[in-house]
Amino acid sequence: MVGLAAYHLTNLWALAEWTRKPLGSPLPMASGLWDLVFSDLSRRSRLAEAQRRHLSSSLDQFRSASQAMPDGAVYLSEGDAIEWANNQAERQFGLDAQQDLGAPITNLVREPAFVAFLESGQYAQPLLFHSTRNLQATLQIQVIPYGDKQKLLLSRDITQIERLEKMRSDFVANVSHELRTPLTVVRGFLETLEDGLDDYDPEQIRHFLARASEQTQRMQRLIDDLLSLSALETGAPDPEEEEIPIGDLLGEVRQDAELISRGRHLIDLDIQQDGLLRGSHKELRSAFANLATNAVRYTPEGGRIALSWRPLTEGMAFTVQDNGIGIAQEHILRLTERFYRVDRGRSRESGGTGLGLAIVKHVLSRHQGKLRIESTPGRGSTFTAVLPIRRFMPVNGK
Ligand code: ADP
Image: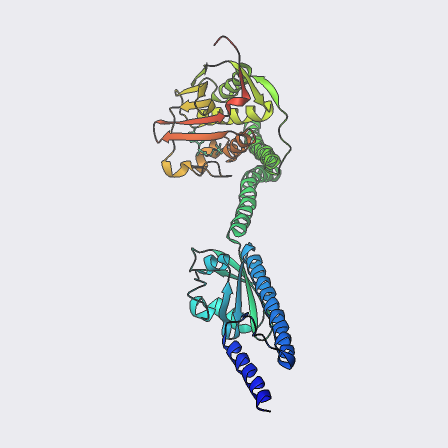
């Protein structure tokens, strides 16, 4: 009897000892009934350990999936306390996932629109919100309630999309404005003539018609440029490449410039390295001619314009140098934006559409080239189109 009690007591003691040890410690050895108890406990403990490991690995996987998401993700528990946030969310909301853990998100992101949205319980429509904690980014916030008073908060940075949308609407506004002005002039002339054709002598009528014709040409130029730009921008297939004799190409460009100048400028052409340029004749001619005719248009009568083709360390360069009105530094970076002009009136007067340099930039980038602009107001400008050296096959001679 005493022996049996001692047997049970020793094993019970061993069991009590074991429960105090860390999880996963081996169970004590025993015999008889206690052996059965211990091996059953051991099996259950192994099972529980396996389940715990499985759970923890699922949690790790789930966290790395949330971490890899391009959007911000914050898990909120009751009272909107932060349970976990991925790096994107930390960046977008200016949070520190370690330090801010457990704090209500509304204590950290205090913008009234955000707080009101979170508290409203109405999450069918996402919230557009300008974060002040993070450099004025625009965030789109979605909240998905789940479980017991828990929420998943997803945030997407749509600053870039918003900027593109603004560019698109500015573009439409610009095009409409550019077309409306000449159209109004033409309509004005037509109405004047309609109302009193007999009031004007043929000389005056000819004058009206000439002005109206100028305006229609302006609209035509604008539409042509818009179509070229749209073809270049909407992923037109790569240009059909030809091997273009550089002398012929630049000869044509010089002629285009002379046509616009009508003898008012001195236009030089210097080809330092003759050869064949591989690219689209149509596109390169339009880009180079744009640079050359701009030089004419922004250089007063009597000015000099130097066109040159020469090797540089980073590629082959077509340079147009003028001693015209020049451009102030603050405008230079923006000149290739569509419709960006330093002086709207002057551009229009000389037949500009404001799209020329945008076209040049696209053409060059389709040929893996780039545009460099240097200028001093009142002294003149130098526009250089640099094309990769591999596009050029020099021929002997010069
Ligand atoms: P635009 O049709 O108005 O000339 P561009 O896109 O060709 O449009 O040029 C944009 C602006 O850059 C022009 O409006 C003008 O202000 C400036 N610009 C371009 N080339 C020159 C130049 N050679 N000298 C001075 N300003 C220039």
